[in-house]
Image: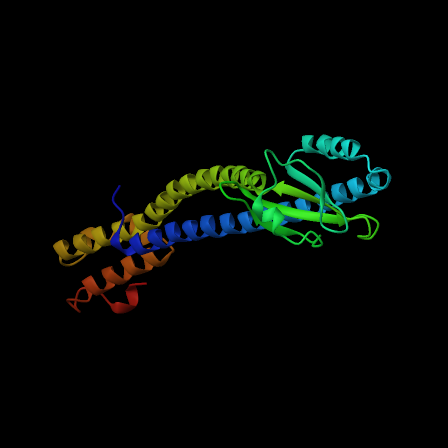
Length: 244
């Protein structure tokens, strides 16, 4: 497909604009989905941690550790929860869901921190950990780790669907841009051909009936101007006032 050199930069600018739109919308989508999902994860995790903390008060006071273990095990069925552990007011572990043992990163951490923090275990994915105090921290605290890999998977799905849509629009836009640019370039090509025709005719008499002269746009104005200059090459041939 031949495109006039005059419009090649315009077409390139359209392609560049499509690319900027695709990259910027994808970045906004990733940032928005990541922020919203992370906030949702932290909020849900805090709610679950508080539920466990409220339900474990009597169990801890009765020192029924098997019931405490059974309590936290059932919450592992919730999507996204990777681990749960409960410590007493001295930082001693009362129950946990780690297999085969508690990671060193957990053992060396401060169990009194219940705000949302990010953890990364050796050879494992990243996690968001939140906690909730039991009896305002007097009886210990509950900690829950949510797998961030699930957030990444949802981001990939959301961005993937968006990219399918953007790619479809991009392909349609390319063909539409090429068609529109060629549509705009046709008068220029016709005007160039008319100028050549005038140059060959010399006096412009044979080119006075060209349909290009009837156009009311810039191409028609230029064509009439070319015809005017072609005729005034010999001032005796035509009066300048007769040419519009």
